[in-house]
Image (cartoon, rainbow, N blue to C red; front, side, top):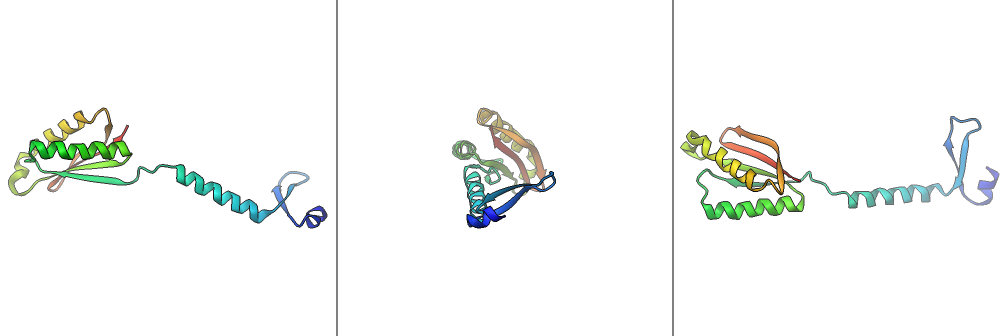
Length: 135
């Protein structure tokens, strides 16, 4: 403790359970500052996939619109986002659910090299959804 006072530093107990206890002479506030700085750096480098992008189709989506929206899905997957693809049934379109399933199957086959299915196609009311994640 006397050495720590002479150097204007703190005496920090590292392992209190050992006999004798292990202590270190250091500037404790600087140590805490450096730890916070390291944690911030780790968070910066860490890429989160938690953000979800959503693309909506209808069973009657034209070929051009399909290709255009498929390109957006590809771009989102390449950027590392999860993509929720939703097919929205309007009115009596719900009677032909198979068209939506066919469209989702086609989309997932075409995007198999970039992403994979996280959650299987699921019908929730007038919406048929599937979630894709990047490979």
